[in-house]
Length: 614
Image (tube, rainbow, N blue to C red):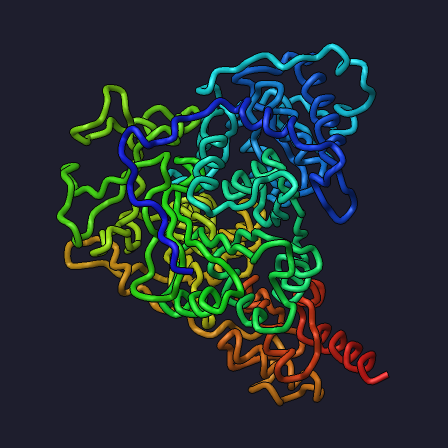
């Protein structure tokens, strides 16, 4: 793919924020007999989706829900979520996505901090009045005379929470016009193709509804594209995902570089991907693309297997801010701004830096969000007056905290962060939030978290802590990790915890992060044998060898637990790939989660081998 996305548009060429009603009007024009949502347990036509969303909107309005109300949607990816989301927007309210898989404490915090007026859920969530989708969709009496009231473009559309540097996640507020403008920009630049009518695409909904990438996916149904829900089991296993894309004929798949990397190995198989009505478009984003992966993706775009675009953007600026086609040549880049945003590369004094020099990226334009919910001081710090000479009075820009430099062709190269925020497997993580959660334990006197590249052979978060003197509780890494898992999302739980008697400091007395020790091999549990062979059955020896290679752990025993040794979702993918290559067994990723103990996994694999031999 050699196409170039438009360079920065002239001011008059910028797409203004469109009212959210534009999305609903486009949705209303799609033929009712076409498929709108395809999920494992249910399929909705556009006619059925509109009817269900209208019933939800009518019942929400009857309960006093309207503009600036916040409705928390604690529902899994599925047809009910799409109907509830569109119904909430139709009622003029804003939605707050709350992933049901989050720890209960975090779900409660999101609902209470956002001041949600109502929770739509399949199970109990503390913090507000609650209803189920079934209650909202039962009967049709309210819809006969219901007519949505017009709502101003600046009215709140959704609140999505991101990791917070203060120790608590913060809610980002986005206005109603921004999502419609985002969709129009993706269409205008050719990233989203087809007319959305008879030539509608089939879009995989891959992101958790709690992440802003999901906005880019659900708005596609409003133009006539079909949303195909990807369940957790499928999205976690590259082989299952490749088969799913082929069987469902997906035309668009949004994923992170970490997710794309193992999937690329399957692109060469005949019919593995791209069997839909158009070539598969990979929308890659969420973290930096390495030069090696940039080249690999470029090879696939060159042979016509896929189209691929690198998308960059913070939640605070409505999902995507810049985009660049991935052709595999030159330096990896995040492209140029989409029409609805303008980029500024500035120094500490907000002066533009010369081309080619490093500076902090600021974003300006109509898709910049309203700010942080109930955080006026933080909003004032991050959302500032646009410093450009041609900026109009009242124009604002968002300080991203990302360092970039302009390449000779005008595209932007991402260099890293200017603060404590990191990106890991597509997740935006503020390390101080992990530190605060760990330091809140009475057993811990001091804590610090860092992102390292050497955690059991893969990038991961390491938390260092100093046990409190005379602590009564369990201060072992295993105990503290279990406590963190009950308070933080799984992707924020450190891959390794290291206890230190004292933290290294610089000559000036400040923490010396560079001197923090690398985590050693994961400790063996009692009874673990020396080396993979000692005290293990033949199958256990084979699996232990794979574990040792994947986890960089020299001592593996039959009672060892893959995840207690530092395993995580990315390493689980590597594990099943090695098992397939070395043992010839099609081991699904879900089996690693179901059988995390080595002995149990070996028994499971023996059963798979026996079934193959029959």
